[in-house]
Length: 256
Length: 274
Ligand SMILES: Nc1ncnc2c1ncn2[C@@H]1O[C@H](COP(=O)(O)OP(=O)(O)OP(=O)(O)O)[C@@H](O)[C@H]1O
Ligand SMILES: [Mg+2]
Image (cartoon, rainbow over all chains, first blue to last red; front, side, top):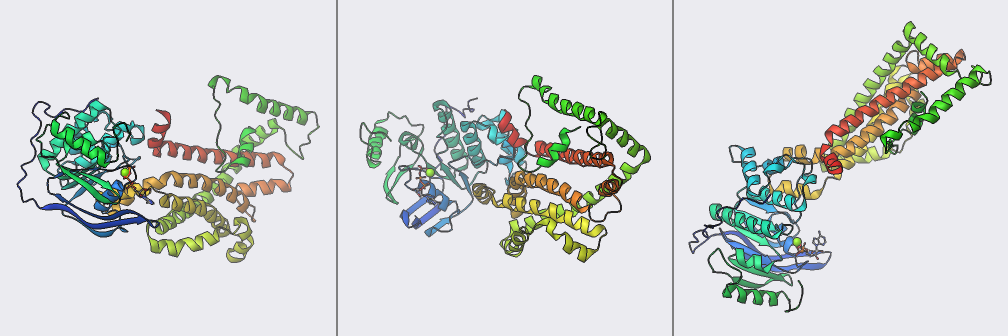
């Protein structure tokens, strides 16, 4: 079942970004090495409250490692990571608890809402999984599990939302619907978002700012000021796309 | 019933019941046991197989009925069941309890696991002489053997189960700010459960064996006593009836564990079947 499309005709406005935005997350000189091999080599990154940041980077460039550090899951990373507020993560693999039903996975640890179950059900409805609420996670398809994992992060309404390739297993139509959903939630609650993706178009359609992680640092950064909804054929995006692809080392006939 | 007797010999963690793939051919598996029974009966009737060595199947049925009517079997069974219940309960509480202590804290692991790993190497039945010296020949040494036989598989498996819980789920718990109690209740314990159930099966397997061996220690009541007493009078029929009862008990607990597994691990079964 395709997710409910929140207001396709009147997509949400970008949140009113008053210029002096306080940071929700700040990374300073973040380094990380595994067995002597440096993966992150002094990353500096500040994410403003309510800012939508997308991060590109080739496989193995350290995107998930950076996210783990931001989520406070990496005690061995060097440098400073400060996050001001609550964090929710949709991991690269869905990581649902297999012995708890889908709905319980969403509701678990959901505090500060009067009825966690109802909130969880509503979130499932938004990603089009109402019928799978009582299913065991191991019976979900790859895309269903990914949507459940995304819903689990969204329902927490965090100050900082970390999304690690949350759309990779979705078909094109569902993906568009879920894009809308994330934008809609972003407009309503204004979390800072860091979205990791391999898809340059996706980054350009969604984010305020697109980063390229390479050589253990933020190697490149582009602001995208175009108002949403954006169309991928817009000349500004076309220009940005080729810059970014070049930065990613993709030649014209190359593959990602 | 000859199949259960053989089943006891292979009872253990590795012994998986093979279900006939096509239900319609299940009866074919009954043919050879029946043939064996018939040959056994014929051999006995013809005098080739003397009662002194092995009683005839028909005699066994009569003996069982006699034993039940006299109340001997029930009395013996009750005593044995009581031993198992006490031994199993103490052993299970100790095994799982120690595994929780060792599994849920570093301090607990350092305190509990090394001695447990050392003790597990001791052959259970080799302890019997020592236990007799310590506890005499009453109920205590019998229960003690049972407790140890049950506790170790449950300890080892539950501890391994807790340690084996996916660290990625613990990370989920951490970002979702689950309390320690929630982490244990929703992730650690359910995650360890499948392995604990493996331990439970091993425990029951060893537990029944421990009972049989322990009941050979100068018992004055129970199934073991009934069997030993029968040996004095060359009553092979009573011995075999006793063995069959042991088998049935083993099969019943095995079925109970299966039922428990089916209930507790539906999240997995869903994956396998649908
Ligand atoms: N726990 C670990 N131990 C050893 N090496 C690791 C560990 N975690 C990550 N790495 C290594 O660090 C590098 C970066 O990994 P990371 O998962 O951050 O990549 P990524 O950018 O997310 O890649 P992908 O796009 O494929 O998900 C990889 O080379 C990986 O092998
Ligand atoms: Mg990754």
